[in-house]
Image (cartoon, rainbow, N blue to C red):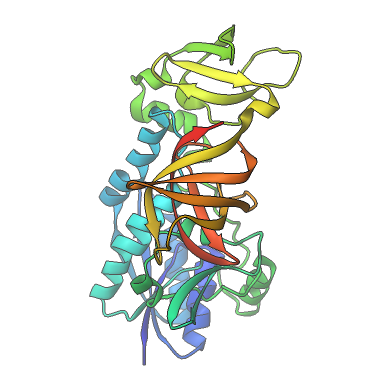
Length: 346
């Protein structure tokens, strides 16, 4: 009997994943990651209740130090560098399918399962990562750092389901967390207040000091409280009055300036990406569909080699291409790879 470790966060998705796998005949045990310092851990308690309900073993993996170093520090440092990070991408790469995968193997697991909405299939004599059928919940974007070896040892039990189906089945199985709300977008930032989180973390940084808001011609329009509090494409929260709506087009960290422009000045044709990871390395140059952020639609582009980086040219200009975010490449519904947006060219 194959042994599966399930990453249990105390939510509906991971809890149902454990239940489905147990009912499918696997030997299942749960692991809950301890990622932060707190007096109580509802994630652990809820996961423990589900494990007791399913009559499976439950373990706790203390990754607080790793999470602080690999995710929280990265998150803050990216904002302090005038970039907009994606902590879920980094957490999946370094923690869930790094530290947690290794921990699961040490406990004898043949596979690691999570509640992600994405598909792993074996086609054309290789493992492929594909989009989930439920496009609203598809999480393939944040999984582009997976490797062929990992894909062969990962299970996504919810791959074919919608969130509505997930909750319905969880209710039918009487899971203790069937009606639990989905977690907030950034799990380690209280109340999703990333500005205050960064301020507490690195309050003396130049990126958190006041500066000027200027238009693309250099005209001063107002003052801001810190470059790290802004992101490309942002419109609200600038405290300036203008005849036309203005959007953040660039962050000038050196001069502590937030540069704003009209809507058409937020669009870009090209970008350079770094830290590129290919699940299966393609021959470049090559055409792909690409997503420049988690919630964006795919856009057609051509990818060219640029040393250790890649140069991406879109068929049509894209709105608010943001350094620090990931660009992820697809062929149809298959994830080919991705990288971190480093430079943007208009």
